[in-house]
Image 1 (tube, rainbow, N blue to C red):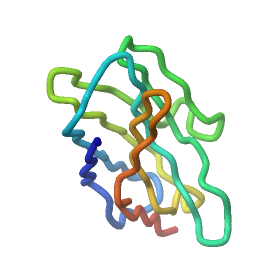
Image 2 (tube, rainbow, N blue to C red):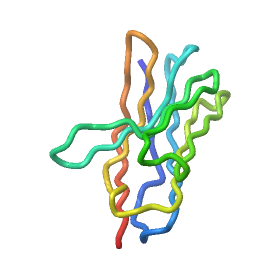
Image 3 (cartoon, rainbow, N blue to C red):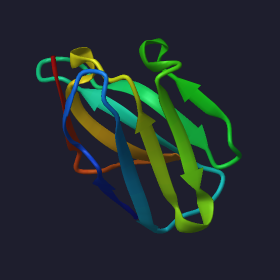
Image 4 (tube, helix red, strand yellow):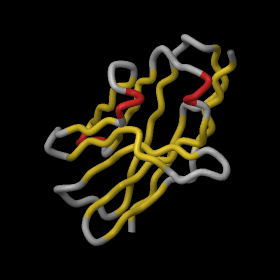
Length: 115
């Protein structure tokens, strides 16, 4: 089992920045992938960014150039630096830990961007 604890969401004005953090604990083995997904009510959860334990990254096109994902592997923590936020980034953001065949989710943190 893996437990994920997220922090860092909140309310910000358009053009502002937020940094999300997610700390994993429990049965942490490598290789693995940690990432961030987001979901708006009534829509499917979508990938925002992910990063493997080896350092490979993947970003949604909509956040490229604005969001940066990073990891501290010894601390089993993943971060999402979000810059130049727009109202379209408003969503619940969920941390994910994935190591085949298991996938774990955090409880989610709300990000609201006002125009």
